[in-house]
Length: 244
Image (cartoon, rainbow, N blue to C red; front, side, top):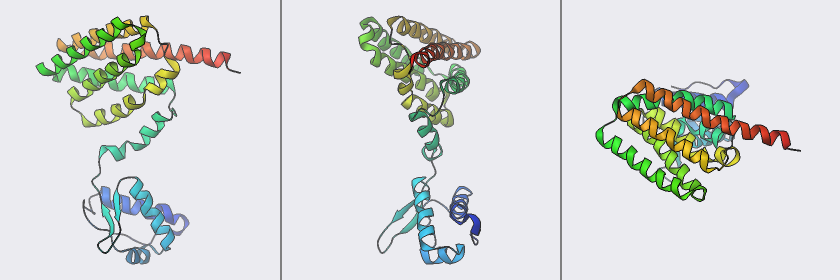
């Protein structure tokens, strides 16, 4: 399964070989990697390099390292959580520009909302309606309920992803919506007019989904994302203009 690591990039090569064996299914979930002494001999590497490589694989969530008599490195299930970890860090620490994030959301959330219109069940529509009612309560309370309104807004967007039923879209959009408030806090003006416009957009989107209008749902979702990122980009430009 493994071979001597390439000496000019031994550390990365050890990681790559073990990772590939796991992802290709040569190592199954629950399998124990060969003992440290055996791996050292196979890869022709030092104990320190091998242990560091195993720690990286553990951080990626591909293996679990257990100590004790029955210890060792064991293969863990590969989930979307591990696959999406890098994107989570990029969005969380705002290493993605507003423009790039808007472009991504327009495309993906348009697709997801179109799929939701095709696949929504009666109980899904009722759930979306309940979210709109909750959003309206916060709208009527005004800007003091901004955070509560944004929470419902995010929940509704994620509901579309769940209704669409594609776990890849769900996983990626969950990362975006878990961290998007950092962008809102910095760039989106907290104004009642914006809350009401957002709410009207959501009402139109939900109605199109309810009516099974997939194309209209997709276009409305894309227009909604585009408009609100335009608000944010305008504020970003003002901040850049007046920053020292």
